[in-house]
Image 1 (cartoon, rainbow, N blue to C red):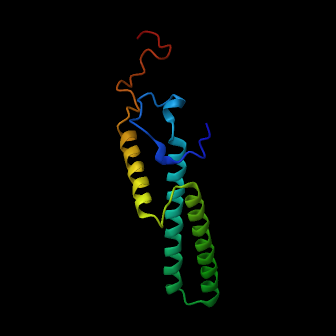
Image 2 (image 1 turned 30 degrees about the horizontal axis):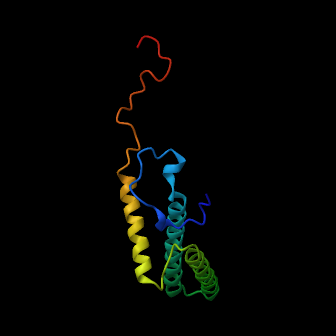
Image 3 (image 1 turned 180 degrees about the vertical axis):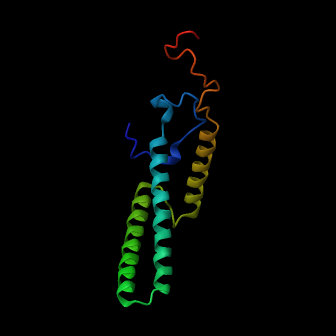
Length: 134
């Protein structure tokens, strides 16, 4: 199965509590990749905003030139990340209905993950190691 080509909107049905089995993780690599890319895109946007604010505060011409270079680099990075996300089907800035479906799928997956029993109820270590006199 080619996980990189699988879009995240193909997650179907509830997640199985046996999440450690590979077949129950169907669609998760794409969801994780898209989440990381979206987080990166948001951080790039924050960097653009910070550079723009810094430009309004700096009086030194050399410093302004350096900040302007940083701003240009951030804008170019934003374009690259956006293009990557659009080519993978993780971002639909021109198709609001498609983006809404994607966001809804991501929200449902987050809810399903939050309902998984990731940790056992009994975390007692007694009996798991060789412990004399217990």
